Image (tube, rainbow, N blue to C red; front, side, top):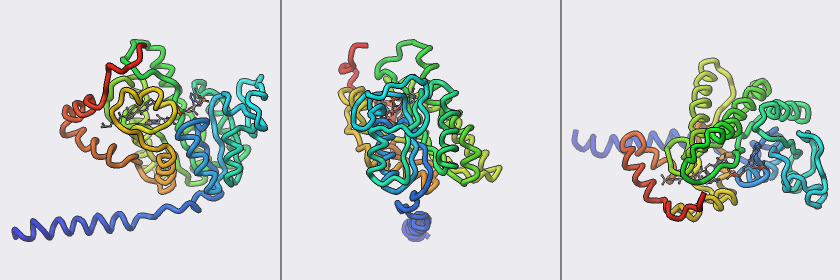
Length: 315
Ligand SMILES: NC(=O)C1=CN([C@@H]2O[C@H](COP(=O)(O)OP(=O)(O)OC[C@H]3O[C@@H](n4cnc5c(N)ncnc54)[C@H](OP(=O)(O)O)[C@@H]3O)[C@@H](O)[C@H]2O)C=CC1
Ligand SMILES: CC(C)CCC[C@@H](C)[C@H]1CC[C@H]2[C@@H]3C(=O)C=C4C[C@@H](O)CC[C@]4(C)[C@H]3CC[C@]12C
């Protein structure tokens, strides 16, 4: 009996775990060929890298961001295309879009507008319907600008950030759902470790990311009960080396960031395989979360030890 408990049961557990994981479908880039995908917040960072991966895989990509320099580049000249409309619809040439086309995208187009305004979300989805004739994957990735410092008591900023980082995700989902139901498509929600655990210096941002978990994890349950064939993948990311993140936090954090290119690919893989959650990097996100429910104070302490508050920039 002793031998059975010590050796056989763990071995059986390992065999079962191996069978479970190896029976899962493997990712192949061809899975994205011809798929119609929206990537929000794709002018920089992880969103930009996702657009390039999707383009290489032959997807039809529709990228969004506000109208800023990088997306205003027309025919190689920065800022020559001045925009008089609040929301420029469809088919604008941009740096990111140009590169997507060069990389082999089925098609690539830009729709710009601020996600602070819920009317924009509806317009974005309408353009997708008109131009792509449907939608297979909605990747919600954009985030509004915030500060990396002690909470400053600005309630208006929390509200604004909730609009951009949370409510617009809800509104985009509601508008895109009929198309996603028709295609049996996927919703990919880019969140953060800061949406699972409280970290210092990102109070408003963290609130918006926790809200995403509440909304989309509940919605996933309802989809399941109602047999709605639309997957929801919540992505839990650690520190990633995007320009904005590095500028805000690299001096203060005692940890090395993971590469945005690999991060972008892992998000696409997880969404395509219809995984419930993506953890990137796995070891530095999933493992600390094991502590969260059983030794929360220990996790809080370990986290604080990785911060250098004396290096915060004066607010
Ligand atoms: N980098 C990191 O360390 C981590 C990132 N994440 C998550 O990954 C995702 C991407 O992060 P990252 O690549 O670093 O972000 P970036 O700051 O590089 O990109 C943010 C994108 O959102 C767009 N955006 C900003 N404000 C608005 C707005 N009001 N309306 C519409 N679009 C807007 C920006 O374009 P524009 O300004 O032109 O509008 C840009 O394309 C986010 O969801 C973030 O929370 C999670 C954990 C860690
Ligand atoms: C020690 C471990 C348990 C892991 C800790 C990981 C922590 C430190 C990681 C996980 C998520 C990360 C933040 C994030 O999600 C997004 C941004 C936005 C960007 O513009 C500025 C940087 C910032 C605040 C990241 C800072 C570092 C965070 C808190």
